[in-house]
Amino acid sequence: MATSLTDLPTELIEHILCFPVLNHVDICCVSCCCKRLHDVCHGWGRWPRLQKFYHQNVCCDWLKEYMTRYRVGIQIRGTVESISKRFFTEIESLGMPKHFCEDELLFILNTDKRKSLTLKYYARKILYFLRQQNILRSLKTFLEQPEEQQSALEGAVLVDQYCNPLADVTLEGISMQLDEMIEKVKKMLRLKNPSHPSLRCAQGTCFAIDDSELQRQMLWALNSVLYEQLHFKGNELDYYNPLNSYIHQVLLRRTGIPISLSVLYMTLANKLGVHLEPVNFPNHFLLRWCQRPRGSEDIYDFVYVDAFGKGKQLTAKECEYLIGHQVSADYYNAISTTEVLLRMVGNLLNIGKRGEGNEKSYQLLRDSLDLYLTINPDNVQYLLLQARLYFHLGIWPEKVLDILQHIQALDPSQHGAVGYLVQHTLEHIQHKKHAVCPELKRRSAPEHVEVQYSVGLIMKHKRSGYNCVIYGWDPKCTMSQEWITTMRVHQLSKGANQPFYNVLVQDGTCRYAAQENLEPHSAPLEIGHPEVGRYFSEFVESYYVANEELQTRYPEDMPETLGKVRELYHGLSLDMDHQEQVVCTAALNQNNHTNM
Image (cartoon, rainbow, N blue to C red):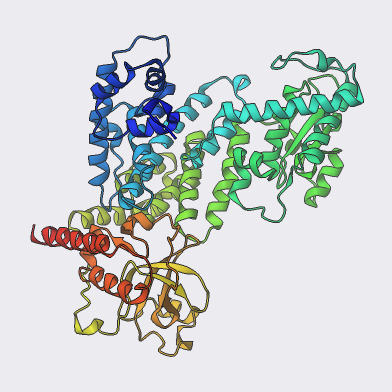
């Protein structure tokens, strides 16, 4: 049993020192007590994620840094809290140090996961945006480099980072994984040819193998490790999953599509001294390996490597069997790193276009369009698609006008489509200036008497079995007749003439469900939906608390939700005093908002 502070584990001492009642003077006093506490305080900080931005031997005005970080934290939190429904995209204009901004946003995201859900929702949006802007700048710098200095792996990592800005993906981390694979290949090669010259080269040393038989042995070892030992394979069953295009996911899941596996294979082979080149073969990306002195462009002087097909080596004629038809010699030519990235991003773009029209597919489409137009900014087809996408989503109308102006300058023949979008975008801008307040839905209104459930309740669908949370309702079905027919609403006992509920489903979808198909969940649980924070501020053991914006639309729902929770789950060990406090505070905030 611990008898003094110094007897406690380091992590527990750090936890104690994090208590808000302690200030920097207290921490300094603690550090002066003894060497043990000095070491704990010296190796720890209130903002540990910032350590990578400071070098141990570099002098720094720590008081100034502390005050700047503190001010940035207050400003960022105020910005996030003021966002409401419109996503704030001018955060860069605040003039704050970017690493401090990111640190405060991460601090918000890492607090109690059940509370401040709306704050976390918009903090995540801002962090997503900030990181993407930084990655886009890195991509532009990458594209400005001479072609011979551009690495397909680095380009693939940048694409991965842009589409997954909240994931921990770095070129250094990916390269370390590849270095481990290279050591496995060398170990395998040693079994086949202990005297192979590449085995005498130190790790990280650049070298090239000229002898074709020695190259063949190296590719044999690479295939053995990659496909037999590590079990990498082409993802034939889920080919159009975007994860197949992200290099960190390819390494994690050990599966991918032809282009992502080719980038991996080519990078490993080149590091092992075998020069392979990317080939933009239609419908099936390949690599080529020259069998003659370098400089030959005769397609029959190359062996073609199918990384998707476990490294199988093909002749030019056998490549045509992969796609079932003949192609011209141009398709066997090597391509640049930029062209590799365009094909990779083009695949993601096509997946986004094939999507189901939900938030996830729209985000993929937006991200892949941003990347494609950064690499090839004058592609009229994709500029028009980007303008139409932004218009459809109702975002960035001013940027839509800039895109349309650029299209008109590039291709005047597009004046018909451009003119239509310009007219409707200007109407949208005018409409935003005179925005209509959302409709208030009071449960006490006579037309809402049949509405049984309220926002925040955790429900289960009787037929489909999915779990969900209600974030809106209508006294009658408001969807189009086409939707009603498609969804066979007429087969329900009450048809469309019953309350319908907007629900966030555990699988990440948003659905519109009839009242007769829903029932309160017998064991309410959190709903892992990315949009939960857009509508709710907190999860309280058995239900969600609507945020201020949702309460504006449904001002009488939270008391109803609490009453239903009492009725349904009175046997559970619930902190009812806390629930009442939450609801009363929400109601008070709502009254204040209404009276303003």
